[in-house]
Length: 128
Image (cartoon, rainbow, N blue to C red; front, side):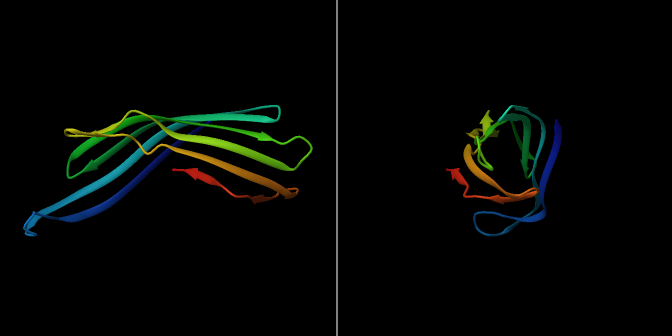
């Protein structure tokens, strides 16, 4: 089980109008808090996390809830582990009158145990 917090802030930025004149400064940030868990079931592993995501630009805020899920399996008789993850299944972010879906991603990965305690990450594919 795990708890995570991520925050990205830009600090103060200078605002500009359509005519390129200064309009004052503003701040922007993105943050998320997540609660996750994972469990092994023999050669299989399953995990997931629930996230609350918030974004703010110049005082306008948007928020969303999302779920990440993943599964992996150790291949029988081989020192190889394969995995699949789906991230950002959730509600859209809504700023004022515009609503945008979260960026959905599907990832696959490969891990090889070269020696005890030494792992080599193989090719990873991410969609989109």
